[in-house]
Length: 201
Image (cartoon, rainbow, N blue to C red):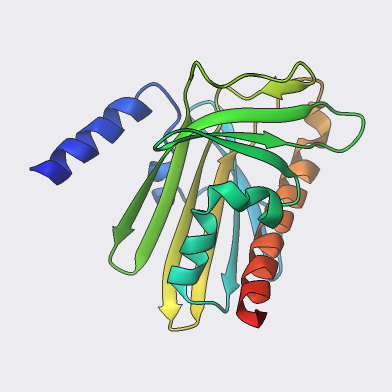
């Protein structure tokens, strides 16, 4: 009964935001980048959704521990300049952008699920009274994303990261495809580097 209540609560909270969990069944993706890391995009619920995927040679549980370590995101993902835990499952994330673009920020509510050989971390934007916006940043009110870890072997995990590619502000639409390809590559490479660094300690 408790599990049903938690699941219902989460569904209600996401009813006011963009829930990317259903994208796992989408087939019609447009390719942006191929190789060790693939980056694709599609339109979902009127938003441009980007997806990056690769195989990392690390155990699923260790990858999961890094992804849910939001406090240390600035040490893991180099474009993240600050994170603030606003509530138990609510965090504000502040991002740097290449010159001359303003930084971005978003406030999200997140949920963690373990389903068989899969681990899922999904999040969606909400409003929060403690989430102060820096005047030199642009808030992303429709921010949403999902991490999907699928265990292949003991030290082999398929990592999928999808996010709402909407950037708003003064970012030109013509540069979005390149930005998504860069972001997907950077995020997965930085994740791999953080895990390799932990293994060498």
